Each structure stands twice: as C-alpha cells, then as structure tokens.
Amino acid sequence: AMMLGEIRDIHGKKKDIQLKGSGPTYFSRGGDGLASVGPVLREYLMGEAMHALGIPTTRMLAAVSTGKDVYRERAFPGAVVTRVASSHIRVGTFEFFAARRDHERLKQLADFVIERHFPELLNISEKYAGLLDAVSQTQAHLIAQWMLAGFIHGVMNTDNMTISGETIDFGPCAFMDRFSLQTVFSSIDQHGRYAYGNQPPIGEWNLTRFAETLLPLIDDDIKIAVGSAEAILQRFRDRYQSEWKIGMQRKLGLLESSSAPMELFNELTVILEAQSLDYTSTMRGLSSILKGEGDALKASLTDKDSFESWEKSWLELIDAQEGGRSEAAQRMDRVNPVYIPRNHLVEEALEEAIDKGDLSRFNRLLEVLKAPFEECEGFEEYAEAAPESFTACYKTFCGT
Image (tube, rainbow, N blue to C red; front, side, top):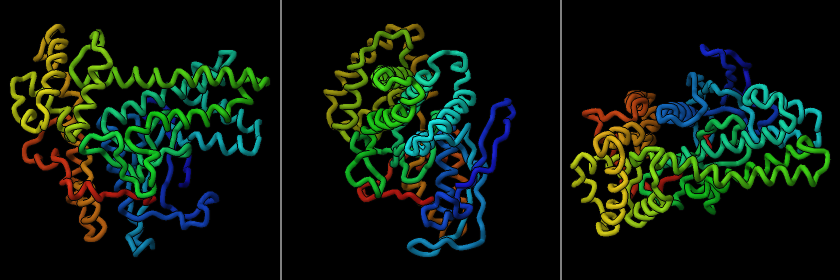
C-alpha cells in the first residue's frame, strides 16, 4: 500500500488517501506490490456493503484497471484500488516502534492519534491510558457490529485492526449463510483462529498487544502501567456484551428500555445454530411474525417446539412495549438487511469481471447492496443463501 496524503472531507474531517496494488514499497517483503482486478473489486464491493449496513469501515474511492497482467497462479488483469480512511494507523503501527524501543516516536505517534481521533483526551493527565480505553470502546462497538451482521473478517491480526475502529483489509472476508460460531472461510485460517465466534476474543487479544506498546507511556513504573492497562482491558468483554445486546435488542424490535434478559438473545443463537438456519434471512423474517405472516419462516424450522418457546418470551416483551407489534416490525426492518454480499453472488460477479471483463453482474450486485434494507422486486435471488454444495467447499484468499 502507498499513502498519498490526507485531505479534509466536506464535513471538515481529515481523511487518508491510499493506493493498494500500485507496486512495491519498503514493506513489500519481496513481493511485487501489485493487485489483480478480482481482489480490488472485492475490496470495493465489501466496503460499500459495510457502509450501507451502517458498520464503521474504510471505503474505496475508485477501482482502476492498469492494462497490465499480474502473475499469481496464472495471469490476471491488474488493478489498483484507492482507499479512504479516517486514518490507516493500526495496532501494528504502534508495534513497529515499540519493537524497536523507539519511545520517542511511539509517543509522537500516540499524540498524533489522540489529536486525530480522540481530541477529548488532549487535556487529561492520564491520556495514554485514556487512549487504550477509547480504542477498547471503538473495537467493542466494531466487532459487535460484525457479529450482528454475520460478517467474518478472516485475518484479524494486529496489522488489520485500525485504531480508529474502522473495518480494514477485505481479503479473505465473507458473510455467513447458515449460523455457526465455528464458521471459517479463510484459506489460511487452518485452525479457526479467526472463526466467526472467535472474533471478540481475538479483538481482546489484539487490544492486549496494543496495551503492551503503550506501557512506557502510561507510567514510568512498569507495575503501575501494567495495573492500569489490565484494569482497562478487563472492561472489554462487558463493553462488547453491552454493544452486542443493544444491537440484538434493535434486531428483535425491542426498545432500549426493554427488560429483555441476555438469555433471550443467547437462546436465539442456540436455535439458529442447532437448526442450521440462515442467519440473515431468519433475522429479517422474524418481523413477518409480528405482521401475522410468519408461516414461511416457521416452515424452515426443524424443531418448532424450541422456537415457539423462545417466541412466546419474545412476543411477551414486544406486546408490553409502546407501539406493540406493528411499530416493532417497522424498527426491525430498518436494521435487519434483506441483502448482504452472498458469497456465491460475489464470486460469480468477480469471475465475470476477471475472465470476461464484464462488470454488469458486479454493478447489479453493488446496486442491491447499497440499499440492503429495501426489498426490491426482481432481486429475489440476491436474498437467497448459497447452495450447501457451494458453501461446504468455499474458501477465500488474501488477494491484495
């Protein structure tokens, strides 16, 4: 990747502009630094989809073909993507200086990040502990949003975790069809380290690495610094659970004032996994029950008794709320998408772009994903899960 510089957007906020696939840099590790059109279009598509879903993300300003081939397992048409982010600073950026014990530049970087992303910390005495705390909160929110959407990043190493709390590097990422905490698509994740259900603990692990880089800045006394960092890190799980619960309340049409217990949400995930239900369509379909149109959803169930027991508890909470079932259904349809980047559709669109130079399928998919909560007549296939035969052997790769 090659940083071009920064600009201010129409709201006066600074944005970084970066090229991916433009050629070798000091950090290319012997690689050619190039990208092919498939991975570039995947980055573009996923960034726009995440933005439309309301998930904090980097976005792609442009995807441009180079006219030259890039050689991997075979020749592919080359391309460059222009990425926009509030910054491209990652946990790995801090590790770069910490590993060299370059505390002067580490402090310079931390001060820059505070000014850029967390200016409310500028005038407090313990601003570096405050930085760790603020980043912990942004990550709790981001990972909860991933989990709520059924998104699997695929490579959650420290160099793919932005300090700003934006999703970055759409390499072997994918969206889950049938709900399973063990879902893995990344070809390089042989042991499920970055599986769907492992994303919150991996986020915590990454934050621990970030905390280690900040210890010299938090306090000169290492014991005090460690104690302060540990106290902050211990709050991550509660923060994540809180963010996830708030999100699940919204997906189920429950108001924030609802007294819904965590068990209600956990029981639903158990049902989803035990019955191998499609996550996105099931969550979207729950509102049909509130509209008196739930027959299609219930027909997909293999164990109706367990669902009906859960449904009874859920409907009691809905009926006790102001606005009842009608308003709850409307709220649900505003947060539960009809369309996500279904893996088989993404691959079909990329295949046509790579092998035929035809972007029509890609553009049609992009159009749908930019309005994920609105049902569009004639686009029914875009809401359907991939065939099991496809999902069973599907793998994603680090293309850029």
